[in-house]
Length: 341
Image (cartoon, rainbow, N blue to C red; front, side):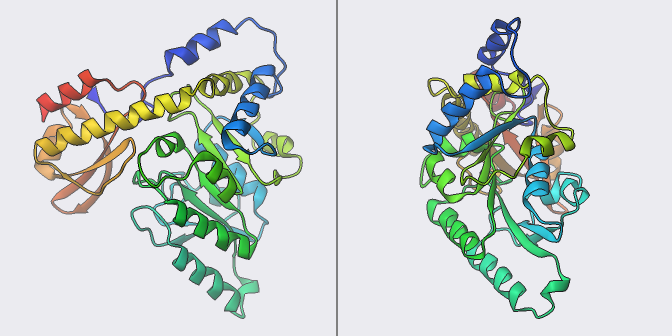
């Protein structure tokens, strides 16, 4: 069955698997202290133009989001996110399970608006009862958002300035960050993201790796005894080499960007295939995620031949599906899709 269900339905890029096999019998220090992990960190610092960055590797996105919020927030603080933010919708209450409330703002094609954020922060401290309330202690954004949309440079730095004013960290969920960096248009670069955000992660799981995310603290602000706290959360990988080798491979000779550019290019072809057949799009996105609006009958027919991600129902008669491309998507896949459509 043809599938565009997600960007991590395949295993890992063969180049990454080959490096894991090549290094398999090397005897390496554990817990991410091996030579490959250290080399990967240096390459990421260079890519971010951020020599002071502190970096660690974690297994997955939900784990990373939970650990960041659990270690950077005080017990009385919550995290601000768009109502469609991943931590609010699809992480099974992981943030709340760590004792922190998600404080939501309206979403605008997946993004939060700086003016609305400013209003929330201003009104909180103007409320004379705020000592009895959950304090806003962090701002969470996804880039790309859950709808594949992107923050412009202006939008990102406006949020950064607000967070600086209120002395709260700006945290970027970069599960699909590579697809944002590879997109065409007014897109923040990796050094600009490192300058604007206090902490962010570079996704590997959804961008060609077998697993893994590279968490970057860009302002000399890694929480004290961070490795110990990671271990408290059951997230310290003894064989840290598994992640280090993958990110060392991804950040050698522009390989990460090569993978992500390919996926974005395939998404543009996928978009063309749907448009040629008269399908409507729920919104416009320049990344590897595309959202198509289908009538119920069409949805039921199409899902018998092609696997997509169900996204939402807009009304009783229409469904939004998500089609995602990856490093493994081929032109032949898209020609097969054209024939089905």
